[in-house]
Amino acid sequence: MQGLYFDGNLELKELPRPEPGPGEVLIRVSLAGVCRTDLEVLKGYHGFKGVLGHEFVGRVAGPTASPWLGQRVVGEINIGCGDCDLCRRGLPNHCRGRQVLGLIGRDGAFAQFLTLPERNLHPVPDELPDDAAVFTEPLAAALQVLETTPISPGARIMVVGDGRLGLLVSWVLALTGAAVHLTGHHEEHLALAAPYGVGAFLEKDLPAGDYDVVVEASGSPGGLDLALARVRPRGAVVLKSTYTGRYPLDPARLVVPEVRLLGSRCGPFAAALRLLQQGRVDPSPLVARSFPLSQGQEALEWARRSGVLKVLLDCRQTG
Amino acid sequence: MQGLYFDGNLELKELPRPEPGPGEVLIRVSLAGVCRTDLEVLKGYHGFKGVLGHEFVGRVAGPTASPWLGQRVVGEINIGCGDCDLCRRGLPNHCRGRQVLGLIGRDGAFAQFLTLPERNLHPVPDELPDDAAVFTEPLAAALQVLETTPISPGARIMVVGDGRLGLLVSWVLALTGAAVHLTGHHEEHLALAAPYGVGAFLEKDLPAGDYDVVVEASGSPGGLDLALARVRPRGAVVLKSTYTGRYPLDPARLVVPEVRLLGSRCGPFAAALRLLQQGRVDPSPLVARSFPLSQGQEALEWARRSGVLKVLLDCRQTG
Image (cartoon, rainbow over all chains, first blue to last red; front, top):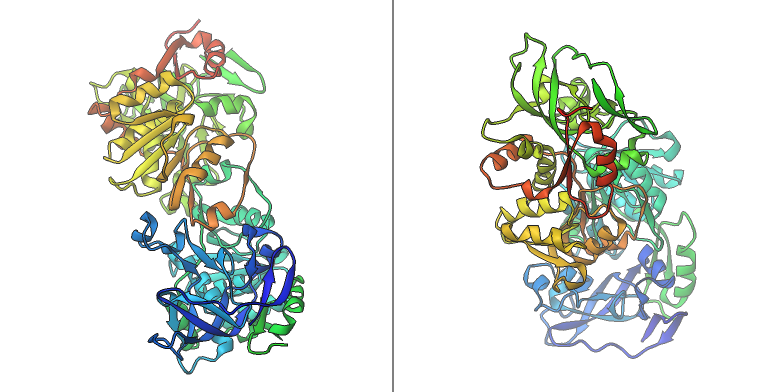
């Protein structure tokens, strides 16, 4: 099969089709999405070598005995050992020995096929097209903000960062009834917030006043700086994005106002699928461009440009 | 009256006796405690000028019409405006226009007299001696950890820092039934943890394994580094101490394990007084040395040495 392989260099390679282990299935990938984390991996994040990609929708292609055979699916990306203290505590996403699709120890979705355990799968409703279902993983990550901190419908919330994740976060937070402001640097992205009732502002135009909750989704140290400047005392800053580099934290900025700084990562797939199926979230304006898998290198090069929203790979189109 | 005044230089001065405003009382200070924050102020923290000190016990000396006259008291140190959004939300400790005794806009406790609003006062039970009551403020700050994050009695907890605050925190957390480990650099301080059932370890001897909650009370960037290294995924790090300087935060250390970093400051005086009165916490081993107010400069010089526990000032003893 073809796959987009990274080992310091990124290359489209002819690779052996992966073999599903016990309890696993083989999935033929239809569409895959490029995430900022994939671009960080290209810079050395996680030290990963293998097939990139963790956002996908596909169809189960084997083994023939699997009850999932032929089913269109999306899949959770963390694969816990099932046996350690964290897995037993119900936190397989945090298993210390976990594999993560396209990120840690398991080849990912920028290929014709991938494998995942059956327990990681979620069926995609028939009426949900592939180009919406492929957003299940990032939408679930956006919904994880609601798992990370309670959001009161009376709250005043700011989301920092008008990229793909920041937009998705602002949309799902607005669904709670809370007053949500989104800030960023791209007027054409900020415009995508309006249909959800999100107030969108260039950073220089942000209204005065504190926020009960600030979500940092900009992937830059400046975003965290802005978050800490604008969160109210006893408020929460939810960190959604990682980046290489360090933020010079003044501990007094947390201790004196008793602010909470909360890491937040992967989220609930089932809830994301429900919102997509109900049409509460329409990710289609986020799609910047779709490339065939055969042009995978160009796709990642293009995704890396500043101001580009979601880039999709059509993994049925090979060279 | 005499008072220990800081305006870039620290000097014992003859100062006018402060005048209580409406709703305030004049308090004759009996004992005052030196806090690490006082030492930070000497390095420029808060840019404070005035009489230092915020830990005290004293007796109300006026006005004669006050129902508090003659009462032995301790006092909360934050003075909110009573009128802003945060005061109305029940968060006067976080009022943006607040004064803080000996730290922001109000002369403090290293003097013969101070003033505070009546609403800041707590009566000291007769059976509680001054040299225990003077620990009410730091003990309340230690108890604030329990307000900052729920502590399960089944939790495994580490406290980083074997100074005054770290010891108090380890003691009150052990009262919940949780398994508490204290770590630091001073064997003679660590020994004070044993009577409370706290396991005490030099950093190099810390047992393996993650902690559900880590409390950073060391006042150094290295303490936060250790906390983040040892907290479990989905665990909490409570920040109790500020310091000048910055901690180079890698956001992935919060985002990937979904760790919570929680600022925590002033705490519940009434609960602190209850624990002191009931003898659940005995602060007497924490007293390193007591100085008369007339030797205030020497007292702060002495408190600044590494490894010194609580230094008290007897403000009835003037030169």
